[in-house]
Length: 141
View 1 (cartoon, one colour):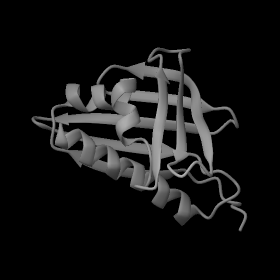
View 2 (cartoon, one colour):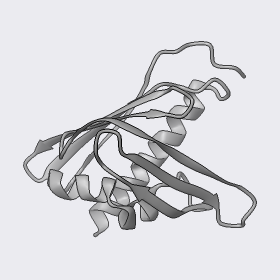
View 3 (cartoon, one colour):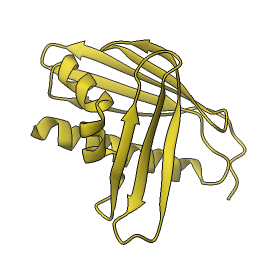
View 4 (tube, helix red, strand yellow):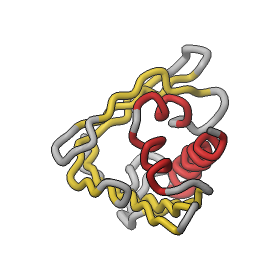
């Protein structure tokens, strides 16, 4: 099914950690490899992240059985420590992520342009699953 709408998709969560910890587990490669995948059948064996305007990032997402892998990456267009990450993907899509501190909790809202190959609900579900994995990991350490 081809996606014809270009309406941005939003996923969100609240993690029960202060914003500095939420930011660190989102941006530091040693943490990214622990959560950047949508299901237990997948993992992230590699991550690199240069968190600055013009900096690049890349995370390899791979099926644990070795049947498939791909690199997810982009270039940062805006960075405000503990508050905002905005980046562009190679295909021209845009992603914005906000971190809102509220005491010992942090609300994370991720808005992204959909791609054209998969249904909107499938894309939203996949990105939400990764965000949920991030929440579980971040609250567990």
